Image 1 (cartoon, protein in one colour):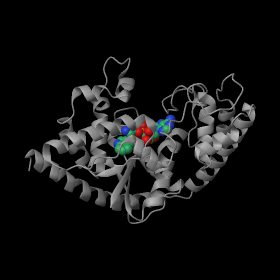
Image 2 (image 1 turned 45 degrees about the horizontal axis):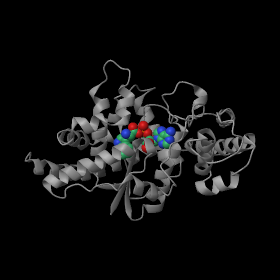
Image 3 (image 1 turned 180 degrees about the vertical axis):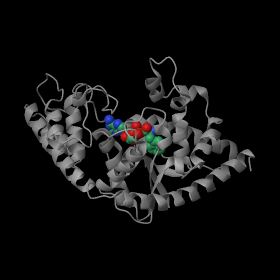
Image 4 (image 1 turned 90 degrees about the horizontal axis):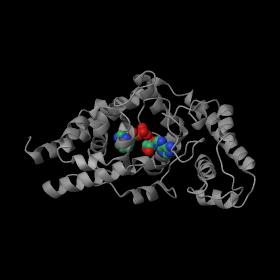
Length: 336
Ligand code: TYM
C-alpha cells in the first residue's frame, strides 16, 4: 500500500493558511484514500524547537491533532497518528542524510534564508530542518506529501537526496512524486498559498505581528469576518483572479473556493467582472465565519483521551515501519 504523509508544527495556534493549505487537503485526501493507502499524520515536534513556542508545547501538540479530527478526519486501521520525537529513527536518519546532503543545496533553501536573515547567529536546527523533513518522509516511503506551496522546495530536496542515495546504494528509498504531481493529487488547481490579509504579497503567517493580517483557528467567527472585511484589495475595481496584479482579490477568491469546497475555477468564473469588492468580501466573510463556527463546535466535542489513544497505536506502527527502513540504510552504510 502506498503512503500519504504530512505534518504541521505545533508552535502556536494555527492560521487559516495552515488549515486551508495543509490540514484540510490532508483530511480530504485521507478520507478519499484510507481504504487502500496508509495515511500518516504526525506532529514534527523536533521541528518545533528550532523556534519559539507560544504556550505549552504538549498542549499545542494535542490541540493540533484534535484539529484534524475537527476538520472531519475519519479514523480506520490505515490512519496513523504520531509525534516525531516518539520515533527516534527520525533523528537517526536525519544524521545519516546530513552526510549525503551538501552545504550548497541546504543553504539555498528559501525558508532557511528567510528565517536566518538579519540574525547575527541562528541555531543549526534552522539550517538542518529540511534534512530532518526529508527523513520524516523517506522513513515511511511516502509518495504523496500534501503541503502548502512554501514547502515545495523541501520536497524537491527530499527527492534529490533520495535519488542520490539510491544511485549509490540501490533502490532503498521511495522517491516522493514531483510537486506538480503532488498538486494534481491534492486536487487543487495550483499550489496553495494563502496570503496575508493586509499585505497580500506575503503568505499568511503566524509570526506576523499585525492581528488583522491573519485569521487564527480560535478567532471568534465574527472577529474573523471583520478581518476579511478589512482585507487589502486594489484600485482596479473589477474582480479577476490574477495573483500578480490583484493578489488581495485573488486571495479572497482562493479562500472562498477552499472554505466552500468548490473548484477555484468555478468560483473565479462566478465572480469574474463583478465590480463590488464589498459584496465579494461579505460573501467570503460569511463563508469563513460559517466554517469556523462549525469547526469550533466540533472541536469542543473531542477529548484529550481520544487523541492519546490514537497516539499509542500510531507510535507503535510508526516505530515498526521507521526502524525497518532505518536498518536498511544503516546496513547500506556498513553501520550494521
Ligand atoms: P509548518 O508547520 O510551517 O506549516 C504546516 C503546513 O501549513 C502550510 N502553510 C500554508 N499553506 C498555505 N498558505 C499559507 N499561508 C500557509 N502557511 C503554512 C505549510 O506549507 C505546511 O504544509 N517543515 C514543515 C513541517 C514538516 C513536514 C514534514 C511537512 C516537518 N516534516 C514532513 C510534511 C512532511 C513546516 O514547518 O510546516
